[in-house]
Image (cartoon, rainbow, N blue to C red; front, side, top):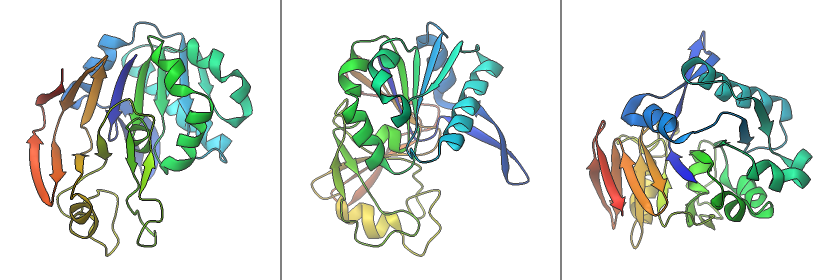
Length: 247
């Protein structure tokens, strides 16, 4: 298994505010590494975050698959793995070549992944896994549930378990102005939440276009990233650069 812990990974191309297609991000060798590690294009599995919107999840899965058609190859099979086909989860995961874990709220996705024994099954395969945003957060030992747009402070479940592939805490979509590219509320996540919560913790704050690649036990950071620890914010990697975090 090869694991990409990505802030984004796939770029939305929009017209008049509407997404018309997705493209694989070429920055920080993301495209190159996907091309390097995906050996077959037989089976693509999409795991959503919100399981109540089957139609939207199908559209999202197709958008990711189409991005591969444009730049790499066409998958023979596209499967949205959700509660409708959960009984076939083991077989679906054992035979997949590429898995995409959607972003959103982490908690429901984590419960689903735990139920289908995702970590145990996928660890024994040659699949390439991309976790986007919440999907990446769920791959870590601890998932940090910071407040998002419209959330009530403080969060009732700030620290929840992840699947434990890496011993890191990830903050996706980071910016240095208010802490999150997609948060436009009055709260400043960086100064009001992330920095106070960082005492005794280490946050790897990834900007969009940045990711951590996990190859067996080796962990390599690609792109701009900040380490937030004990109240200090430090840039530890630049865009178009990489840094080995663990050999």
